[in-house]
Image (tube, rainbow, N blue to C red):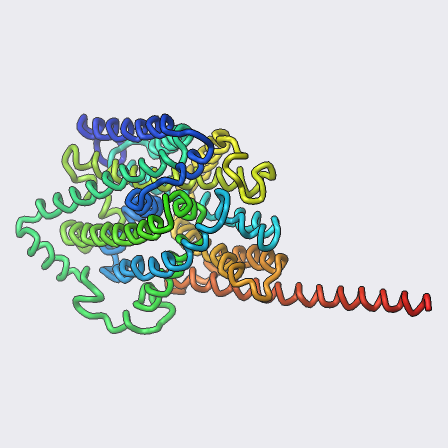
Length: 502
């Protein structure tokens, strides 16, 4: 089948068919092992550390990561590598404090404790921010998949997106979280195989071999800021695209939002068979994510050294040409790898969003969102799939706004993280302050991304976090003053009434 990009051969079609068949089989097998509602929502709370760790890792990967990381290396060098060790840095506080805290909570929702500690409005505000964050993220990931795989294979992007959403909805509806987790493990293997085969293909294409490919990358400046050293990288300039400090601090905040406030990941902690398994799983996730990102950086390095001719062609286009130049089988495997990466994000996102709606906005679920009181939300899952598909379709008409959309999505998790951290701290915090601070922080953060365009990429998450925390504190302060004034007024009125009766 011909298209704008490459051509799908018989082998490529077979790879696609086999992969989709294996994913559907995982859903059917999970359905056979499902015994009750808790199995659907939390995989029976018996998931191993290995499966949980790989599921968390691939849940947060999609076609954007698969293409953006190597394209970033092609366009700007190895600056982006500073984010890789942050996975290991952030895993320590998550394993030490975040996982034990959420493992103590009851129910299936990561936000039910906010109602126990404050009220239902705080819980629903946090759940609402999560839904906005994840729906925008899933739509962007789905659009990126359609555009990239369409360029490689020649298939219409809308068809690729439709197949991806349909298959995801099917196996989520059949097997619940258990199907999501085990298809994530399968998708990790496909993703890893696709990256490795792409690397092997790049080396095979260069006559001088691996050493010659590295020398070519060095001559094109792709090894900066390490070779040669870029002194500005180690500075504090907040407008530099990626610096050491913006990479470490900003990425830490972004990752901490994922692992500390995202319902998709909080479900994984609750699904693990024990606290120790959940803690081990987050470390498995950290090492697996760091390893895959290193491979993707190498892919960008090799692809840039092989195809960058210095004509000013956008990095994403160069990467697309590299993928399209692959022989039959290679292109199909890479496309399946991108499909796997995105499908793992979509299945987790749709499942988590449906769980959030069913538990946090449904009073029949009880204060803690007890799985035993909830029905399988098949209708909600289908609705989520339809909404994501419809949101993804018009993204192709936004043109230059695509980068802004990604910046917004990267920063939208910080207000939710701020609400969680402030609520855990709780000193002097009121329910009204949390609700007002969370909503205003979310809106202010989005506006900041649109109107402040020269800030380092990773600092948007930091600024949004600090801004939302400040707003929560300020609004809580005003609310305490209001409460104090109300008490004084009430006491004065009672005193006046007593004196009048006297």
